[in-house]
Image (cartoon, rainbow, N blue to C red; front, top):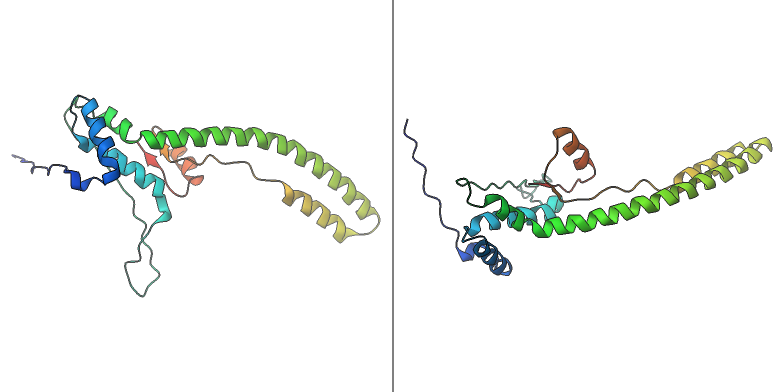
Length: 186
């Protein structure tokens, strides 16, 4: 069988958003005249990851059916045409956002550890108060005291992210659970 590939249309400036044209062209030139297609594709996928599930369309005028698109991109080329560095450059701003999110998450985890100790003390105090209320016959007040103390505790922080570069299917499912807006798997 002879398989003949159809020619691929050239990426022209009018297909790249104006605000990104300079950056994409510059990045491609700095990589020894790599085609800008690779950087542009990664940049577009990164922007899609930022938007995530926040945008959808209702294809039927009188229906509540909502379609949220999933976007997929791929760099296809011969070996050693700098596909990987181009993709890394296209996702650079997303990686920076994720780095900041990781720092915020780590700070929140430390703060939560302190809060957990505080809420443990608060709960012990409430438990003592509830015991006194229960002994005096105020069952409803004792339950409400414990309920209030339990509700005061804040849940553990979650790591909100947009980009992941390597994960098993199982780990990706865990990460996705904490990131319902979606992720870019690069």
